[in-house]
Image 1 (cartoon, rainbow, N blue to C red):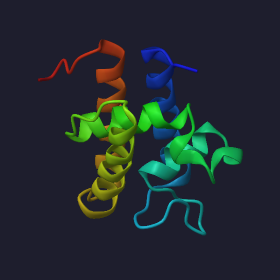
Image 2 (cartoon, rainbow, N blue to C red):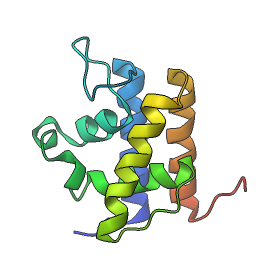
Image 3 (tube, rainbow, N blue to C red):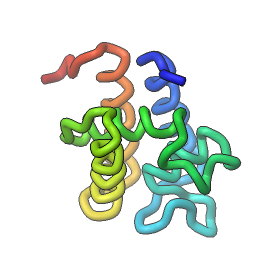
Length: 122
């Protein structure tokens, strides 16, 4: 099932809202207190039943790729690049992102780029 850019942007918005409601963290997908990393936010907002297989889920993966592009990766949707996109998002979340606001801002940027079809700020 291929998602439209609007559906992918909506997934990013839902993940951002999930972080706003539950908190953000590093080094684990979902912490005991319910806070989530960037990947956890995308997976959990897509539905907890998809948590275990989340990386390859057809709803989750396009949002991960869109977020990776916003972070700065030129990832595409071919099978090799999907794994790279996951690595970009996890690496950025766990080793580069400094606080929840920075993560929320990156999700908002990814949503904006996805809706526009290009980076309007570039």
